[in-house]
Length: 463
Image (cartoon, rainbow, N blue to C red; front, side, top):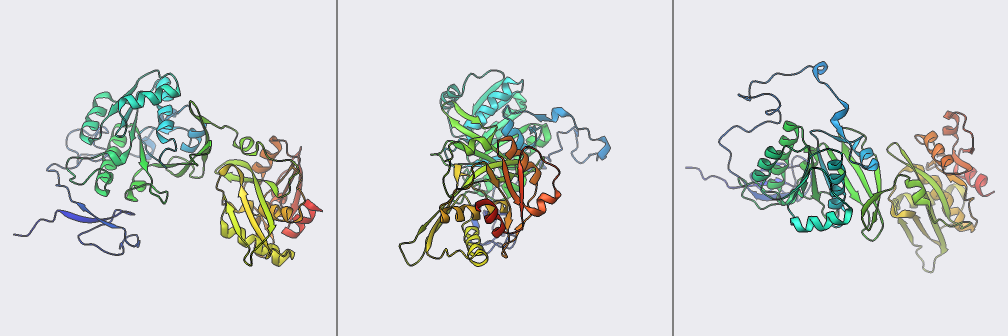
């Protein structure tokens, strides 16, 4: 009689299953990602599909496909969270029957944000069930007392067993369910420990069935690894509808929630929050927030505009150029790509004949944001030249544009929206790519300067 195998090897990146260990995953081609996990026993009955509770009672094989014209969409399919910033990232609100994964560093504020969302949605008439596998009910109440009064149908449950959680959801029939966190959930049929590849994948599959079958919006909190990605198999991010990352330094006041996957909206939107004593407070005008406290008349400081999804965001680019005390000049970039800064300095040396090989260069995006959009190139280059010449750029001037290797200034997307945002905040001059200026309509209240190359931009801004 053949011996029954009780373990298998799973890829942490894509979930590929193998009967033996392999150095490289055949599916995603990543190295050293296969881990050994116990194999749970198969259930005797047929597994329920996500549409089994969607009006198809009795034999699950008796299903009836629907035409696209028969599917109705209502405005009630989206529920507001009470935060415009979060609603923007979600695409307009929480979609009923959606499965949302929220990841972030420990202590960044994931549980606080979701608890505040639960409070807002319960006050708006939704029935919310908050399930915690990490905190006791007393701990949750202490945190709830800090964020303010809780009204409406907001229920709390401390449990990690998926069987008991599924039963509680069927009895309470909530509109929204919060699972904090997916790494603490387990299913009895899987013999591995909570947080393992098998448990995380199986638990997410069960929550996916609940969300799609019952029309309940489910938020699951996911821990992240030291590399900053959600712990567990990468297939977890493929299974859910929306993936949100909560970013920011714990020592800083700001927090950014970024959508990296969204089946119901844009994947480039961000929401900005500020950590205050009573919890998280949304920042409705990030541009004004990021520019607050900037110095007047200081060299090496330039205001730029970056696009995050459909939102233009003004920020300050700072550069400090000092003579090096060593044979090898030092280069440092905070908030932007280090290699991109080196590339721009090489363009300034070759095309504009600035000798930067004997200077240390420090480039910083203020506010702690990380921006890699090429539209910041022109602002970074002019900040470097401004610091090197010790000549300040006019504080009422905003600059954006992409720089090519030959020194040309290339067009950027959504130039009109960037200019409108600058005009709204009181800027008087805008330096932008000449080709973008030609495509724009007439704009009043702000002077537009189109430039074709970086040498022309330096001449027009600094004389």
